[in-house]
Length: 114
Image 1: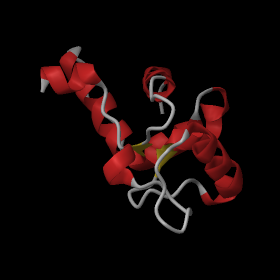
Image 2 (image 1 turned 30 degrees about the vertical axis):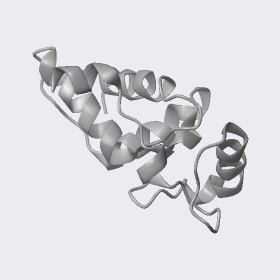
Image 3 (image 1 turned 90 degrees about the vertical axis):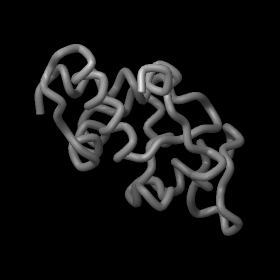
């Protein structure tokens, strides 16, 4: 994984508003689109986003990035759910994962350019 990819992922995660969430796959798609729009080779996927978050994501709101079912990272489940609840992020009825239909967030710049 290169530094430009790591930086792009962290920069995007930093912009996810409180109370909202993105999936690893959505982060990967947005980052790839941004690289392509800049004339660079698109790269990365959900696993690479997960690697970035595991290695360097402690300085950004990592709890706002969840898997495709809305679940936070298992190793940090309780802390992530505490953070999500504190921000008012919509959760499913049993409170174990994000209600993605209500909480998913997409950056405006990518919606306008797509």
